[in-house]
Amino acid sequence: MVIRILNEKERLEKNFEKHHMEGFVKESLVSDESFNGRLIRDIISGMTSFGQYGEQIKNGEWLKKSREPKWLCPFRFNWEIFDLGTFNVELVSPKEKQNDTAILQLHGGGYIGKINNIYRTFSCIYSNLSMGSDVLSADYRVAPDFPYPFALIDAINSYKWLLYRGYKKIIVVGDSAGGGLTLSLCNYLIDKGYTKPIGLILMSPWTDLTISGESIKYNYHQDPLFGESNSTLLYNKDYIAGADPTDPYLSPLYGDFVGFPPTLIQVGSYEMLLDDSTRVAEKAKIAGVDIKLSIYEGMFHNFQKAMWLTKSSRDAWSEIEGFMEALIKMKNN
Image 1: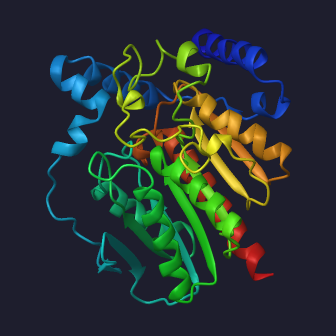
Image 2 (image 1 turned 30 degrees about the vertical axis):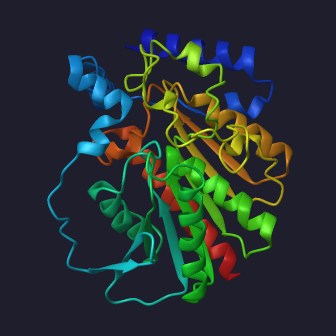
């Protein structure tokens, strides 16, 4: 076991040395992989290799067909759905606390999947970890019916809704496509002179829709979700729909990040999208952003969804809690 972990660390350091000159990227590796983490990774790999069903997981078709029971909101929270005309937003708030801090959650799903129950559960977790903040989740419009820039438009209007409601401190969080959308939103807010968030939290963000990162190649055989195939969700063009994929509002990697607030990025070392995180972190650091990049060894895309089942996901949520607490306290001073 020790030899395998050391070999993984050597593999990563070799790739970082080849493709990244910034020393802080190598220093971002969290070298602590659990048995449960490896087990879940292997289960995902097995599921995505299982014939037509596996292909539907890889290419995102299952997101369109997914049917869930109505989410049961925990008793201590209120759950409200607001119709903003062209899309809905969902507000989860503690029953016994009113404050001026809010979290805007932009869900993942490759821009083709709608919000689902795990993100509603995430809302409660985010609230608990941020000293009782309200959490707004945008059920933004998705492709193919609504390609770029509809998701960004809905994210902008969700943020404005929070401003109009009087929230003074807003943190924006997003995973996968929602992580990229978080960066695009922040880029827009700064460009247009809006009050910017006090911080950003990105989980396995998809920031480069040109799919040009070197990790697409060197993690091709490692990634249990997107690996071993060139017809996965990463190659879906429904959201791009003829737009320029290097537009910073579409692929935020191509922005300059000047003026961005403190940002936490978490990513797994086995992800084909690993470079989507490391390159953003490098550019943001050069732009003077207070950036924290955490690369969790042996972890897969959106490993935080394992929640308390693996040490890495528990550590990631603990890191998020500390980051949000620091943001809120810093803003209060």
